[in-house]
Image (cartoon, rainbow, N blue to C red; front, side, top):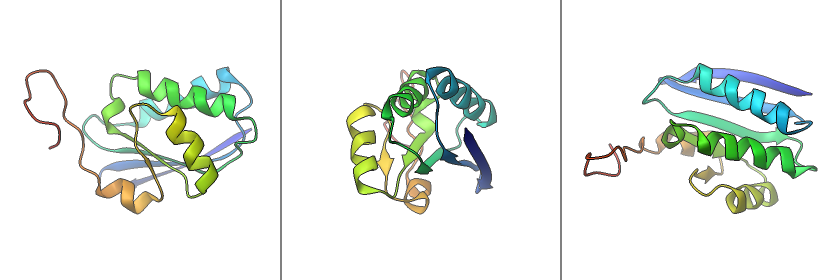
Length: 121
C-alpha cells in the first residue's frame, strides 16, 4: 500500500511517497496521479526516501513511467538513503536523483524543446 503526501512549494509539486509499491500496475497508477497534479513548467519532485525498496522492480517501473511522460524534464527524484539512491541512479536514464528536496528545488527547469537552442532556463 502506498501513501502520498503532496506539498506545493514555490510552484513546485513535492510528492512524498511512503509504504510499498505492490506491482507495476500500482506504480503506473501512482505515476498517473503524479502527472495529473503537475503544472507544465514547474518542478515535480518525487521523494522516495520513505518508500520500501526491498522489491525494487515496481519502483523501477515508476521511474520508467515518469521518464516516458512528455513532461519528464520537470521531474526530479529524491532519496536520502545512499543505497536506494544508487539503485535509482542505475535505473533512471533521464531523471536526476538528488539527496534532498531542497537540492531538487534549486535545479533549473530543463528546456530542451526543439529549436530552443538552450538546455536550461
